[in-house]
Structures are given as C-alpha cells and as structure tokens.
Length: 403
Image (cartoon, rainbow, N blue to C red; front, side, top):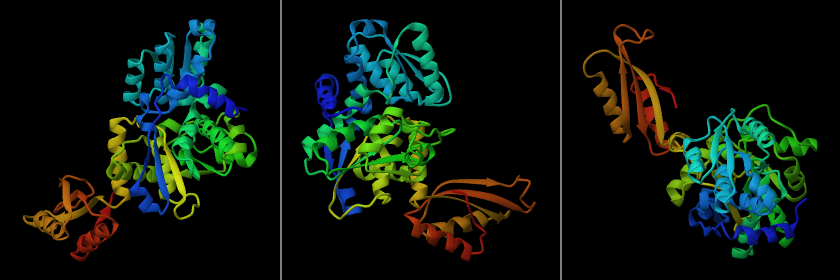
C-alpha cells in the first residue's frame, strides 16, 4: 500500500510536467449549499485532466531498458492523453488502446500528443485486454490507468496541493472510476490531516465500489452505462480497493441526470466546463448525497474537462430538461385554418419561447381531420412549465410531455 512518502517523492517528478492547478472559492456553490465550497480546478491541468500526474510519475520511474521498450496502456481518453504526453516528453514510444466509442476529441488529442492509437472493444475493460495482448507481443511496459502504486502516488499530488492552498479543508469530494485518484488523494490527506474527510463519488451506471466494500472484496459489474465516461469502469482496482477501504470515509453515487444538472449549472454559473467525471463530485454535493455542516470547508475535485462536443450538447439538453427549462410536448389539433395559431397564442400568453414546431397530418395514428403537433419549448423552471401545461389543458388540449 502506498504511503505519504511515495506521494512526496512523486511531487518532485510530477512538477516537471504537471501544473499546480487553481483552488477557487465559489460564491455560487457556497450560497447554494450553505457550505464553504472551493473547487479544485484540475480541468486546467495539461491534457485537461489529472491523469498526466500519475502517468508522469510512473514513466519517470521506469528503468532505461523499460523506457527503451516503450509503453502501452488502455484508456477511455484522459489516461491516454496523460501517458502520450508524459512518454513523448522523455522520448518514450507509446501505444494506446481506446474503446471503439471513445469520444473523437479524446482520440485525436491522444494522437496529437505523439501516441499510436488502437481502437478496440466496447469499454475500458475490453480495451485493457487488447492492451495486455500488445504488452506480451511487443515487450512493452503496461502503464495501468489506476491500479499501480506509482500512478496512485502521482495522482496524490493533488491532495498535497489542496492542503498547501487550503490547510483548513474539512472534506474532499473525489470521483471514483478505478480508484487511482482517490487512493492517492486519500493517502496524502489522511497522513497530513487525519481529521479531514474524503468522500468518493461514483456514477450509478458504474458503481462497483459500494458492493465491493459491502462484500469485502472487489466486485465486477457486467457492464457500465454512464455519461461520465472517464469513470466508466466495471470494477475498482485490487490495490486501490485496499486503500479505499482503509482511507476513504464514505462512497456515494449520483445519477446521470444529477450529473447533467451539475455540469450545466457549473457551466452557466461557474463559467467552468467539465466532463461528466469532473461533475460527479459537485453533483454529490448539490444533491446532498452526504451529510455536511453549515460553513463546512468542502473541496469538490473537478478532475477533468475533456468532454466531446456532441456529448456536451446532449448533456446540456438533459440538464435543461431536469431543471424545467426545456420541454417537448405533443398534442392533436383539428386540421383547419387558425388552429395552430390559436395554440401558439396560448403558449405566447404564458411567456414560453418556441424552439421548434413539427406539424404532421400523415401519421397513421392521427384522424383524417386532425394533425399531430410536437413543440420544443423554452421555459423558466419547473413552476413555469407546470403553469404552461395547465394553461394548455385548460384550453382543451390533450398534451403529452415527451421530455
């Protein structure tokens, strides 16, 4: 099990490549939660996530012979970029296996940092199987994304930075995928400030840790399904599990809907873009997934900002739906002049904005003298959406809410 000394040693190696990222007090989220919230903005890290820390530490500790053989790894995207840049900076050849459906932005970024990218498998675990095949066939050194002491120690330098910048921190909230990040942070924090609390957060669609802790051994899920692709692993690492069990105080989960709301709120109110994995700590705080006191000093670790633009569009829309600011409805109109205008007038009187209208007379489930209408509407929140629906129904429209 790694110790504080490993993290302190890693800091010297990591400093040559990684940035000391900002710790920013948030008036917005402090007001919303009643806590004293400081955001650890690892989104501003080189390659856009914390992964450069662990990758740098691991590759720097390889022997000359190991570095000459080259490295290989598997990653959904952020570890890939970290390994690629860390290897390229010291002249080590790197080959990265990424899931076939990894975000295009992460694939292209990994290539731009100098790695050869192989696309294989439906998720991280299948990509890892392929990477191990390459390891055996080509004699490369496998750089694990999380279940490696040197990787964990490198990630733990985040904990050192938080303690240096905010010695009075009481709770750190950290995402968990394979467990490398939280293992390193918990090791550093608990050694230097045993009273500080470390709370782990998983996505509901990739939540293996709670079951593992309950059963006392690593439990593997059959599959993962979450917008937080950076933490979409079927199981926690065997080495990271031991650290989590000993040094992490609590593990909670958040839904994709809750993650989407946190991401869009952070973007709109905090002017900060994160990926799904980076939003889960804030989602846990905003949704009250763990108990905390008024004015408690809390640091959500926003671990990365590498979100694909297509995914971002979907997440923003989901966040607007969840907060009652976007509504898609369907109704049936008589197919005669003025009916659509009358519907639009009701919506206008309720001060809702129309994004789009789709008018269909040919649907087989619609009467010959009627037309089906779908409308995308901008509303001002849940109460406004309810008022709009009530007004439409009061005018005799049968309204189905689609999203």
